[in-house]
Length: 328
Image (cartoon, rainbow, N blue to C red; front, side, top):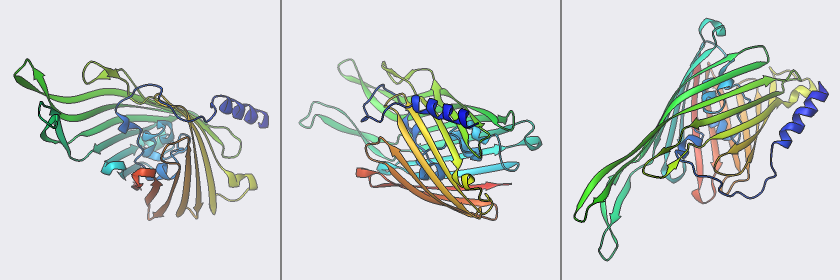
């Protein structure tokens, strides 16, 4: 077992390039799909690939939904994102037959970009005139499924419809007339992943692929969704000293992330849980231009959980997330 663990770690490190400064590699759109609304994920630096998180796993790795605790779970998250953008999400999971038929899930994500003043080029001294107020929005809705194939191996996937509405614009037609264009684009995307309990204490290995889709376009230039590959490890490190998980736990999670539009990142998360009631969390992400650290906590009472996350975001001040979770 120790030999297999060493080989696994070597493979992980070998697949993770050195942490050089970021540079743009390719163009993607629908970047709202890369934003984490879940407060637990935000507090853990988004290192969530191998964690069993119930219905919210649909936003990270669908396989993490396979071992749902109970028959039903619902979560609602609100994220006060940068530039006053409101980024909210909802997820639902249901396990019929005590998990014999797997776990079915629904996810929904919505984005409100606020109100923006529209403009267009004009031959006046300013070079433009104001048009109507624009209210850009976006959403994603998905159906997922996950199943634990053995006591160690679980798989999951999700298909989702994504859309972004950038409002109306005025397009010149000929020399003296204008046409109104509605800037709306939509695409079907797929997420899938696996988790594997290695058998060494509570060590879990996993991988996921998110936002796999065809190329889409608003006009002539096409773009893809933010395709992302992740591999990760997690473990309750108190298992190394044989402490009872019912009393306390210290979960450590590490993700190596390969996005399509910028170089690789390492995400680290740690969660200290006491009596299965209070959780204290911290995360770290590198390389990153404006955000590195994140903090948060979780409180569980009467079957309901409230999670909170705070992320300092450089010139954008800070980001705060809140998640409500309920299960039966």
